[in-house]
Length: 360
Image (cartoon, rainbow, N blue to C red; front, side):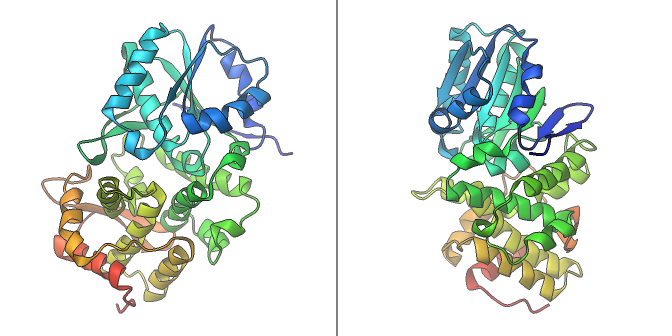
């Protein structure tokens, strides 16, 4: 077994790879009391793994919340604050956030705001968490029907990325995380894209090098732009339309995963890229083919587009009422802050639902 990779930045330490959990024990030793925040699924499937890997870890208490994006809410945040109060957690204690992206988002926000800040470490248990959500210091909740409407930037003390947790993962969540892996290939890592192109996520057996590559891609960006003032905005490719679609379905009887919404967003925003820049038709077709190979299309109709556009108006990237996109100049190269008119956004959604051919 290869030794886990240690990546140190000014703000955060990352331990990545097989054996990362065991490697993390030395970072826990300085705290008198350690608490875990997790969801009900993680408590059943992942907590036993953590205890097995860290048998001498003394856990002073646990907080279990309800899993699912629909529960990433102010009500659940208040529940966590109440539990932190009940457990009398102080600023000298440590919180382990054990779970996927929803968990690390809401638990990170709870820890950062309770008593003006309790230190926490993220132990992501999903592919999405390992390559994206647990990295970069974004925390938050969904509010008033909108995705990640309230939150803050706050870094954990450390992020421990150990692929062993993925053995507990359902296929739906493998797929969701794979969308973010594909995004890194498209915006900055052509070598990663070429390695994955043509594959279905279910055909991949060795995830460790892919996780390490994708995680390092994000670390490399956020270490230079922690507050999303410049190059970090490139990470939003697929997310402007993707978040609107996620919010659209979040308010329906059939909520969807973050990754599936982003995958749809990448088709739409890939099409916009082909109209604004010199993204070749064959490149767009390659993107669409790869996403369709891994994700089933949504079935919204033209009559839903106005509602999706309305949801997009709450996007955090809007400046002076103008929608700013991160787009592709070519596979492996993204740019940000590209102003796009509503007409083109609508046409991209029509391109998606009509399965039109690229004709630039």
